[in-house]
Amino acid sequence: MTAHDTSPHSMNPPSESTVPQNLDLSGIRGYLFDLDGVLTPTAVVHMHAWSRLFTPYLEEHGAAPYTDADYFAHIDGKPRYDGVRSLLASRGIVAPEGEVTDAPSDDTVHGLGNRKNDAFNATLAEEGVEAYPASVAFLDAVQASGCHVAVVSSSKNAPAVLKAAGLADRFEVVVDGAVAARGGLPGKPEPDTFERAAELLGLPTTACAVVEDAESGVKAGAAGEFGIVIGVDRGVGRDALEKLGADVIVDELDELIPAVERAAATSADLDTRPAAPGGATRPANDPSPSTAREEPA
Image (tube, rainbow, N blue to C red):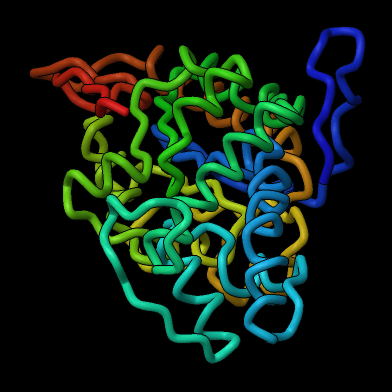
């Protein structure tokens, strides 16, 4: 996975689609996007940061070397400290938990997690990040259709990444690792953070699509009562995503634009029909009389 140039002159042509022609998204009124690997190629930045942490650490402890496969198997999509615990467990290494205030130099679970955060910030500053053009095109289509959008990320760095990618003002709600910690919400693969995002958008979960590329994120979507779970294959593999619970799988999100446009046309057609006696029909993409609130990031 590499960063893409999102300038108008470098936009890729629409991806060749394997999406079923009869895919019906007319019941979906909100899209809950994972960030890393779905909207931005920051999964690569995270991979590099984890490598900067664990390559020397595992060498010092005489354990098997860290590989990219470790990232996908033990870390991808999980809250940072859970990723540390999972990777250490895979090597049979037991480290003290410590405290969230531990220094990055401390060899505790929290110290290692804080060291990784420093490595991420350094890597982001060095490499930068740009949004996937196909994901931005899909986001454009979703918002043009009148649907609501949220970001649901395990990372506490989500606001910084959104800002770096030029997407900070595109989302009504952001539920990131910091929000989850403040609210006592378990991270992925539990569905709680996605459920919180749906609540903040003023939508039932059944009217929301979960958009994920990570194993833990797809599991989270499948564990909740969401309208559809969309898997984006950035390396996990189509078979694996399907087994984990993805309802539809794409290589790039712009493959879904025709389905979004069909759903919008269906909603528009319904809106032009005469209202039933005694009341008007609310537009299909109107979530409720309440206004969606933004969760502070």
